[in-house]
Length: 315
Image 1 (tube, rainbow, N blue to C red):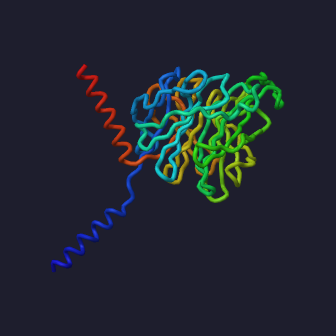
Image 2 (cartoon, rainbow, N blue to C red):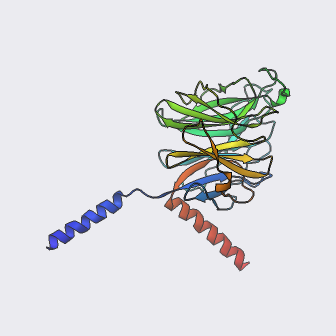
Image 3 (tube, helix red, strand yellow):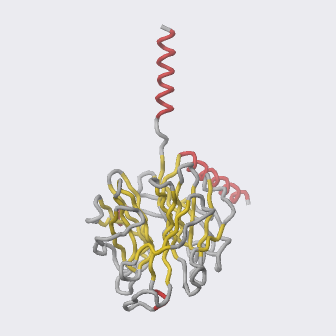
């Protein structure tokens, strides 16, 4: 009898240890005018977001030392890697730092990617994607090189295309290459993997009449992307990021023309349902990326917030 009870107890412990740890959605963000640094928000359901405040990391690199468009990806070893826009203009690179807990960060680096052409106007919204098939990170951003592309009605210093580099360790990087030229000015490119040889690029048409979001499709994360969709968000929307919730994809975007946030839901990236009235985000939230964290990481962040609030109360 005792052996049976002991065996049952050991089996219960084994099953408990095999139970996957609960994960939460985390949203990296910033606050205008982007001089303070990284802010965070978390969600259990992917729709309703709770403010974790900030700044969790203050910007120290770049020409203007700002932190806009913070993009975070968790690597296979559990390390969080983050890149961000470090200047509006006059900068040939972007910021980078890493962390195991989103609290303690590595020294910041300024990664130069467009210094090979000194006519480059800017480096905007670097976006991270971990390519698990090739065990590498892809970083996509937007830059303008005047007179390089047909500009349509765009002013030469606002005629963006998407570029990229790859890296395995954030120490050495591939040469900068053109990622996307759809024939018009574009920024804010986010790669989504749906399955083997099945990728979606969510990005912004940055031409003056549009300034809204669309998608393209490819069999490789580096493209070429084609079969571009119709624009499915309103005028003056940008900064898309994607969260998979169940079997649906939620595409969040910054409705900067209306000073608010919006979202659409899709299962196939062909039909989109506006769910802006079903989501809630902290006041002042600006665009970044959505990724997942463990209970331990979230508890650590909450603990820091409580400690800081306690210290402020004492003062």
